[in-house]
Length: 328
Image 1 (tube, helix red, strand yellow):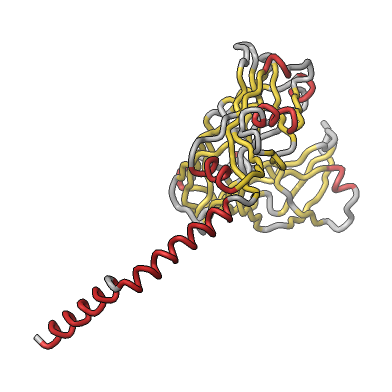
Image 2: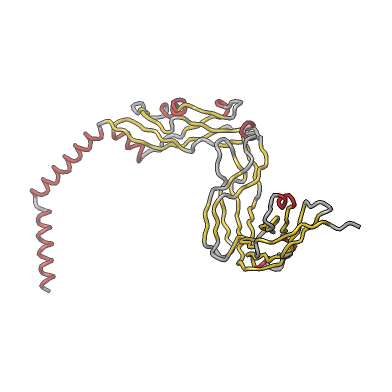
């Protein structure tokens, strides 16, 4: 109860001050002085930066815009404050239009000075408003008359699955795209590179979409591709591979000790049964032996099947003898 009485007294006191005549006179002068200051401030000149749309009109059906002009431009206007407020919070700025027929050329590359583009904006503003700056200072776009070709899509990035896993398949869809560009530029484009990306630590199939890296003056259709990376768990396998020889004359033969060696490697579980000793080739070159006088040869794999990694040969070095083939 005591709290309610105190609160009531405070409210009555505030109301009496608000309704006090002297307070009302002070409040009136404060409002008038603020309004006077505001009118004076708005009567001064200021600069403000605004954005307006930019449209390209009248493009024929047989023309492909490979790199379009910017969708909007920034202009800095100078005028009195109350006029600039109309542009900021009142009416919208008129959009700018580039007529294709007026600027088209044989090169397929149009560059327009800002003054020629913003001239139409000046004529549609209040007479007292001036355009003092613009951005960009040059408007450009590229086009061609349907010249195109197909190019393959290339995935760019770094992909590292989790430990004991490897990437077993990479699928890019689509694997090729159509590129539109002027003839001179079109001849230099061989591949459509996707935006670089990094993935790591994954243990299951991942799917994502990437855009084609843009190139000035070129248009890729479609401009993106879907990526699918399959992963497989790694396991270790050992096979016994015979040592073969090549480039030996008909009168010579090789005797190797041992004649077979173990090849140990890592392979995905899905390919474990498919990879066999026949998929590896251990060869000894006769020409290499002629340059060797130690009687020992370090083995090297001539071929390794796809999907196999971390290959080890045991033993890595063999003893050998070159013998004459007996004649009848």
